[in-house]
Amino acid sequence: MEGKQKSSSPIGWVLGQTGDHGGQYILSVVLAVIGVAFSVAPYFVVVGIVQGLMNGERAFSFYLTRCLLMAVLWMGRVLFHAFSTATSHKATFAVLGEIRKRCTEKLSRMPLGAVLEQSSGALKNTLIERIDSIETTLAHIVPEFTANLLIPVVILIYVFSIDWRMGLASLATVPLGMFCYVLMMVGSGNFYARTVTATKALNDTAVEYIGGIQVIKVFGKTKSSYERFSHDAYEAAHSFIDWMQASILPFTFAMVIMPSTMVSVLPIGGLLVKNGSLSPQDFVTIIILSVGVITPIITMMSYSDDFRTMGTIFGEVRAILEAPEMTRPAQGKTPEGNDLHLQNVHFSYQDKEVLHGVSMDIPEGSFVALVGPSGSGKSTIARLIASLWDVSEGSISIGGTDIREISQQAYADKIAFVSQDNYLFNMTVRENIRLGRPSATDEEVEEAARQSGCHDFICQLENGYDTLVGSSGGHLSGGERQRISIARAMLKAAPVVILDEATAYTDPENEAVIQRSVSKLTEGKTLIVIAHRLSTVMDADRIYVIRDGVIDDEGTHAQLLSHHGLYESMWKAHMEVKDNG
Image (cartoon, rainbow, N blue to C red; front, side):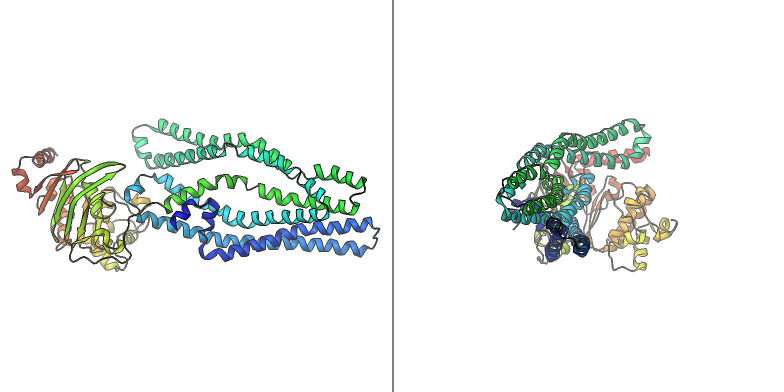
C-alpha cells in the first residue's frame, strides 16, 4: 500500500488522506455543483426575458416574476456555496489535524539521526506551513474546481445541441488561452523549487539568529549576523518576485483570452444569422450562455498556482510520513530481567561508521561508566542503548531479548534517559517533572525533586513548583534545567537509568549533592553514566574507555590506572584541572 502511495499523483495522495471524512467531501462537491448551477441558471432566465422581448411580450408580471426568480437563484447560489465551503472546511481542518498528528507521531518512530539531520526551521516549516497549504486543495480545489469544471461542460453540451458550429465557436479561444497557460507553466518547477529552498534558508537563519542572539551580542557579531539574515530575507522575497515577473504576462494573456468567448461567438453567429442558418433566438441564447461560462472558467484558472506547487508541498509532508522508521512490534517479547548486552555493535551516521564492533556486558543493578575523548562514540552508545537509533550491525539485548523484538512503549518504560542537552517544555516545573510519570501525585513529584537536590531552588522561584519554565526552559539556568531533568528521570522509576553527561553544567557543590541523590535513587537499578569529570565515576563497577568508536580499555578505576593507558592520562589531566581550580 505504501508503494501505491509513493507512485500516486499529488492530488491522488492528498485525497487518500481524507479517511473517514470522504462523505463530507462528496457532500461538499454536490453542494458546490448545486451552487454553481444556481449561479448559471439566471443566464437561462435572461434568455427567456430576451426572447420575451423579441416576441413582443409586454406584461410587467412576466418580467417581474423572472427578475424575482433570478434573485432567488442568486441567493440559492450564495447559500449552497456557503454550505459547501463550511462542509469542506470542517472536514479539512479535521484532516489537517490528523495529518499533523501522524507526522509528529512518525518523528517519534524515526531514528534520532534522521530527525536531527533536518533543521528545526525546515521541520517547523513542513509541520506548520506545508500542512496548512493542503487546506487550499481539500477545502477549495476539490469542491469548487470540480463544480466549476462540470458546469461549463454542461453548458457547452447544450450549445452544441443547439448548433454544433456555435459550439466550436465557443471553444475557439481555448487553444490560444491554453498555449498562454502552458507558457506560464514553463520553468515553474524550478521557480517553485527556488522559493522552497529560499524559504527554508530564511526559516533556518531566523531560528539561528533568535536562538544565538546572546552570543551575537557578546561577540559583537550583530552586523554580520544581521547581514546574513537580511540576505536570506531578500533572496526569499525575490524568489517569489522573479517568479511572478516571469509568469505575469502569459498569465494575464491566458486570463484575458481563455474567457473571451464573445470574440468568436459574435462574428460567427452574426454570419450564421445573416445566412439564415441560425435563428436570432438561438443566437441570443448562445451569446448569453457563453457569457455564463466565463465566471466558472476564471475561477478554475485562479487555482493554477496551487496546481503548480501541489507536488512540492505534498512531497515534503509525504517525505515525513513515508520515511523509514525503527521497526518495533506492537506486542513484542517480554525480556527476563534487565541485563544489557551489546554484541559486536556497528553504527553508521550519514554513511560514516562511528562505532566499530563494540561489545559489552552491563549486569542488572550495576553501575557502569563510559569515558573517553569528545567524539569517541560514548553518547552514540548511550543513544543506541536507549533505542533512539538502531544498530547498523550487531545487536543490543536486554534480559536475553533483542531490543528490536520488544514493543517501543514496553522498552521505553525500562529506560530513563537524561542527556547533556536537557529540554524542558514551556509548562510549570511541576508538570515538567511529572512527565516522568503522569500518574504521580504532587507529593511524589516534590519528593523526587528533594532527592534530586532541586527542591530548595524550586521553592525560591516566583511561583515555586507552579512557575512556568519558559520556552525550552529558558527561564532557568543550565544547571537548574539539568537537575529538573534528573528529577523527571528519577520519578519515572525505570530499571535502567542513563545519564549522558547530565551534570555537565552543575557546580562541584551541587554535583556532589546530585551524585549522592543519584546513588540513593538508583539502588538496585542499572546505572549507565557518561561523565567528563572522572571523579564522579570512580566508584563504578566497570568503566569502559571509548576511543575512536572502539573499546580501548575496561575495568575498575584502580585497574584502569594500573594499565597506564588512555584512562590514566585522562585522570591526570582531570586532577590537574581540579587542583588548579
